Image (cartoon, rainbow, N blue to C red; front, side, top):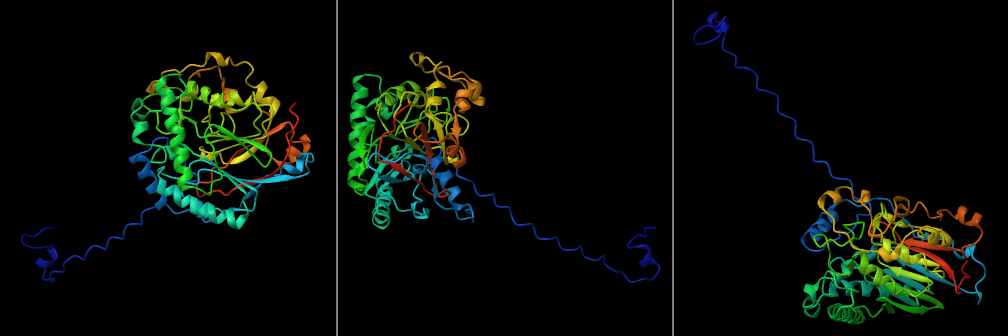
Length: 406
């Protein structure tokens, strides 16, 4: 019972005892760190968002496991070369200034399929060139073949006042036959090749929509790539990017320049349905591949999470798109609602879901499957070499000969 001025115990003569202090609060738990990303894809756009994302990723803890270079058994399944020799090809892509993390191997030809920089500037390219000089001397590369990627289109490797003065600097006019398109393409071609020749002299071949015969093998390289934000590679000015991005009509024009007798194709981005993860590859490139009867190897990157390799039966490349009328290629305007479910929207050409996913291709993913098949002469080797500091080079021996197409 309460008593005025104190407690009942105090009223009965007991001394006042203050209540014990509350127990101390436990310290807050340390904040959890996010798990490190595995092979993050480079954002399609440049600028502040891209730089901020790269800074955040750089602060994350990297995986502790150490990976090794991947050897692909190609020559082991091929007949003897016409001259009895082989060329060792080493494939890397999307290095993004993490070249020092690569465990390089000896070879004859090193192929770098774009995105060797982050911001596409000459200072970054010079760093890569210094590294190329060291690995060239240490690992015996006779030839170093380089193409640009979309990141090389973000800085002063490509961009200049002359290019910015044409069509606002956008790549929307490539291949449309206009005078502006021709002037823009002329500036783009000469600008980036002159810059890389100056700052990357250790690259023996810098290819821009052109072929080169190396060690008796016909290579062709192009930096052009489908709009990554829009996997259906349709025209969308709101998501359109700088550098070497293009929409489907423009890419159809670009890929027509690939020679029919090319043996080793180097592009920055993948074809649709092959190591491209959820159809992010280029549908126009997929259609052109169906026509290349001499193709033996196709190397690319861009989609980092698609790293790896697979063999594909050449006949299935052609058969899988026979129903497509390429003359009906057109750009399709898209809306925000379409972007919520892009894979449910029709393509500018009739590429059904099975074609887009690559399900209609006959793929051989293991050495045992290739051995059972019997020969690589009627197969095409696809290599997604996007390392990005997480993966290691892929390499193989390629016979110095042209297989007889079937």
